[in-house]
Image (cartoon, rainbow, N blue to C red; front, top):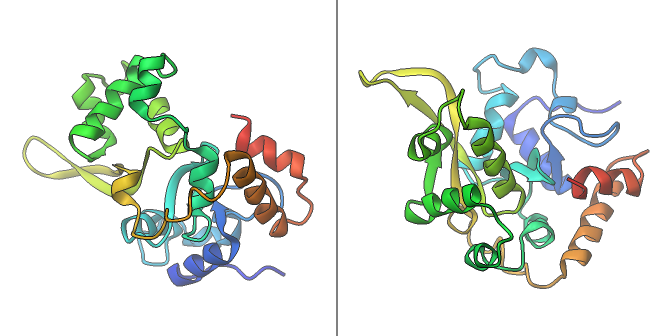
Amino acid sequence: MMNMLMTYENFLERVETLGFMALSPLLPCLPSLGGETPENLWHTGLDTDPWGWKDRAAEEKRLAYGCILGGHKGFVSQRMYPIFYTAFHPSLSMPERWASGTVGQRTWQIWQIFEEKGTFNISQIRQSLGVSRKHGASAVDNTIQQLQKEYYITIDGNDRKISAQGKFYGWPVNRYRRVRDWTPAGWLDISMDWSATQARELILDEGLANADGVTRQDLAKKLFSK
């Protein structure tokens, strides 16, 4: 019987052992935070609430967190981070991709926002682009997800929204930072040791070693086909 994760430290140790973990179940038998924690711990606001662990791990730079498992939300340890970076980060720089026409205007606009000021939460990004939740937010959110998937930006924690009267309101929103600014020293030192193809095979090897019953084809489709 699987031991459930009851504390933040249990969670960190588990991801460090696995190399990576999904936030919610992606495939049967593939480890996920949702699948390895009791339901009654969630959304309590306590230190034992897994919903808070995800942002805390990113803010403390203990684990990377975001849409970084092929666009799916999950966690990556220091050991596996350079491998994921190599597997998903484009070989051309963003200016080169923009010049060649391989990224759209919205992606370029959002990237320029991060280049000018390295850290933004989603509300600030929408405000900078003049979009609202009802008009244009979906396209912005999709671009933010893609930039995470490609390891340009990553979640850095969360912020509380502040009203015009200076009061906090609503649920916390994700705060994002450029990967090159967030990444702790040493995390990317060996990222050039593999090709993208080799890195993807290493990720599949690691995932299959920790997921009985998951096929290589199914895991590859889940992580690399989006």
